[in-house]
Length: 173
Image (cartoon, rainbow, N blue to C red):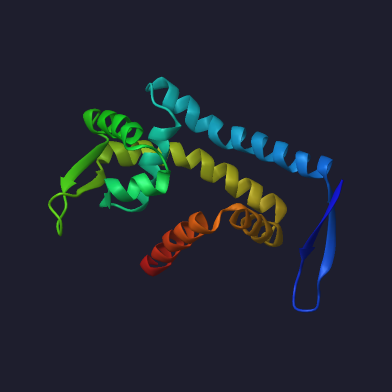
């Protein structure tokens, strides 16, 4: 079966015909790429009896110091019970600090400790190196196309959340 996918725009459209086998190949490439992308951090986390949920929490807390537990729940899309288990471990192990909110004392704001920052850096360095090498290998047009594909795969709510985080980063730079 073939599906027409319109690419381009503003009068310069061209049609891309994709077979189910080509789509399946893309799905498989995504699975293998994700496995490679997570392999280095997984080895580090395994030694600490942590999992990918710990890594994601560390990543997003590092990205937005003072992030509230509620905001982290929204970003990660996990249950409160699941996040509480992860945060409890990270706090007990001295990687994350939970502080009372400045505006709302009922809120808990999350910060990485020095130890947490060091671990997050270690986890993400290998991923950045892998992405940097891949981006250099394929060039700027492919990088832009890859990002467009990823964003197009997101549902509207997730895309809005992602865009909001990107905007916050742009505001800081």
